[in-house]
Amino acid sequence: MTTDGPPAVGGRVEARTARVLLDRMTITRLDPPVDGRAGVAVFEKRGPLLLGRALIAVRADGDVARVLWLEDVHLAGLPPTLTRVVLRPVLAGMAALALRAVRRELRDAGRAA
Image (tube, rainbow, N blue to C red; front, side, top):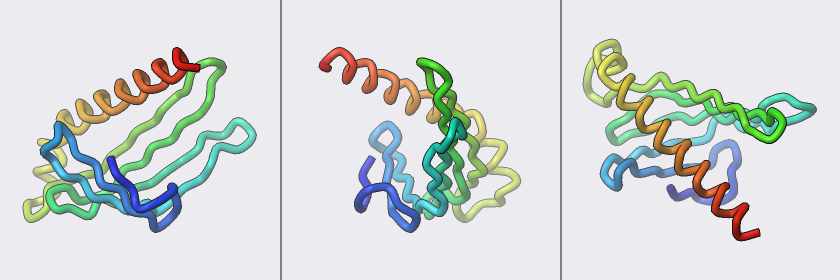
């Protein structure tokens, strides 16, 4: 994943899934966690293949973090109603992989500290 700078509304993010699928996004909402409320980020997907939105909310819950990851995504150039259904299990798998990678990075960082 690459960004054009620190996270901010209007910031651009590029992610590659399995080093193949390019996912370009713009941050359209970025609310930090406050007083026990979840931090929320919304991303507008800009193609070239995926279009739509993703919302990720993270809330601390004791020693763990609770994550809500919602996506309304479709393939560019094809009917959104059809491709949303086809993409749903693929996107769920991609989100699970991303969350596992974050968990591994946090665990490794904790060992290094």
